[in-house]
Length: 417
Ligand SMILES: *Cc1c(COP(=O)(O)O)cnc(C)c1O
Image (cartoon, rainbow, N blue to C red; front, side, top):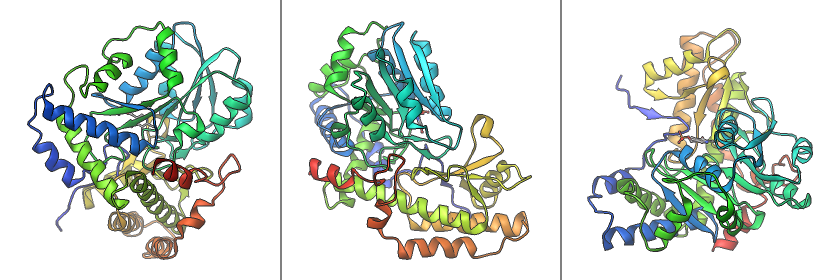
């Protein structure tokens, strides 16, 4: 049979055709009025997409570049910082903090889980200068509660900055950066915004801008103050990834269309889309008798599935690729061979989701001949979720902090509208 290549990976994600056309047509010099108009428009759109009044900056780098920029711009050697770590990306914050000479305290949760708020409360010290965390930990499929951490900082009367890697959180989770008091919120191009890798973006609060004035770590390419100065003139400090920026503009137009022309509503629709694909997938996994790796706080960005006893998860990755050209990801690091991950962030629809579930069932029943597995169980469960899904009810699911999972959803849409 013909096989169409399809990415089900949590970055890079499938590309939006309209963005691909925009990239192909982006034969523009970056010191021209034409580029300045594009850049200004995309930066304004990004503010609406993130849902903030703060400046949003674009960097030509992968997401890690923006993570590094947050650390180098906000800290000085010897500063005490707190990292909340529950997977490979949390560990990256720790490594970055150490690379820039910080004294790094770590609150960690076992892979597949989120942190105990009590432990975070205990680890937050008077001198803690910043807290670094993920909104969703892509390596394990866990969603962390950002507003709970923001509240904790406030209730402890702490002056710590809150820096959130929302690289797979944006477009899959509702955020109210300004309302909660998040100081830096980071996104990446190859995730929910449906374009190739190579751009990172970050929203920065006034409090973070002030902190940058007194921080002493070295920075040059990632000097955010310089980037902001240039952005105010509609330019970037150095040669930007022009084609990606054109693609991003087209993608944000598309996201706005999903909300009838309103980017805030479009972002909410994108989140609901990811949540629907994720819920269909979780139901399918349960119906097959497989287990989720992060059942307690599952992210809508990506679903991590434990491979059945005695079967290397790489077998699922390999069989899906060779039989159906469907690309999913194995676990990273210690999780390699134990879990496989299916992405829902960005340009995924019902057809993508249902076909992957059908293909997964084919591997389990017909290729691996797993005892007890039957055709149709996973598909039926996913079809029922789709047919019966009530976004209002789904939003009422309880979060770790005791509030509704999307406690910020309507509010954010209202603020930005
Ligand atoms: C993809 C991702 C990153 C960034 O990785 P890059 O390879 O540098 O783009 C960071 N954090 C999370 C949670 C991610 O999913």
